[in-house]
Image (cartoon, rainbow, N blue to C red; front, side, top):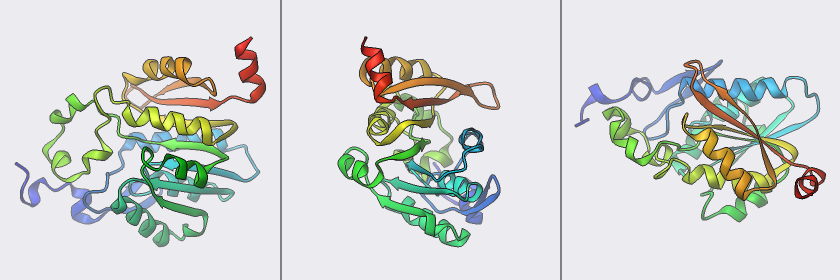
Length: 239
């Protein structure tokens, strides 16, 4: 059972939480950003640090807006589009963007990447990068989560289906359509996922190539980087 204030996560009690150099407002049931996601942001920033021209990203599953807002704060040349299937998440991201003064470089959309796939492509096509911390838990692992997570955080932000890849596969498909040539997709995943993702892309998405797997601070395979091929690269792969 999880009734009563003792089980409410501290982030929801104090109604804010620090993420890198930002203080973000937190509200039930929007997903609370974890330390691993700070590492995901650092990976993107490392790739972008030497680029001086305009940049654009799409964040799939924005939650509190942690990823998009952190990238916008660090990269003045960046614009971002963020979407989530949860209206609570979209509203909280908007609130955080306004409080940080970053709303002018952020577009927000309340969209479901399955039901609204074509709208996602219409709104978000031609971005430099796609970044996502999608729901990636295996359904069978949901029951082992701490009670305060199960009771208060949106399960749709956690449960990735039987193999944890239900949402990830759709993000991969959309990224293959949305990214500019040589644009990159950055994913936070379960440590069991990288070889599964690499194999699935090789079998089903000739537009993308798997670049590398990066590890988190606990040395777990946590991040996948993929890249949109140019038309020339796609033709070479067919030879």
